[in-house]
Amino acid sequence: MSNFKIASRYAHALYLRTSETGQEEAVANDMKALSALSHENREFLAFLKSPVISKEAKSTALDRIFKDFHANSKEIFQLALNKNREMMLPEIAAAYLGEFNQLKGIVEATVTAATDLDSNALNTIQAFVMKQTGAKNVELILKKDPSIIGGVIIRFKDRIYDTSIHNQINKLKKELNIA
Image (cartoon, rainbow, N blue to C red; front, side, top):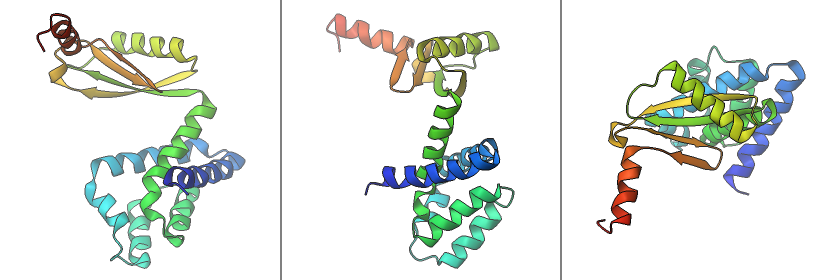
């Protein structure tokens, strides 16, 4: 079975458990923190994947790292650990957030800009994504990349809207057969 399927099953079970008690939001916040830690810290991923570190040591470390997390989040961590699937925790978190967002009508959009965007521009982008997807709410993930020179790149679901100056220059080069 693929890792995606396994992670989705764990995430779905977690979502069902949290929806019974109304704790979906609290656990979603936990999963966001886990995802952020996984993306920002390679040592954490190496720790999860290491076959040398014992289950007991991993359990203790996870309890310390995530001491403020909701009990349901900690339970899924322990279940994954007991089934030797702790290396899949970032995928489980991503699958949970995907299910949570879908059921709550939330769309995540990644916005890449050369400089910081003002609130007016962010509101316009949110409205654009809401109109394109029919979402109730849009969560923007902001990234800065000076190499795009100007404009923005908006990624959500399976769509990319690239209005960057860098992209426009590349298109112009192709049209003029310079590239």
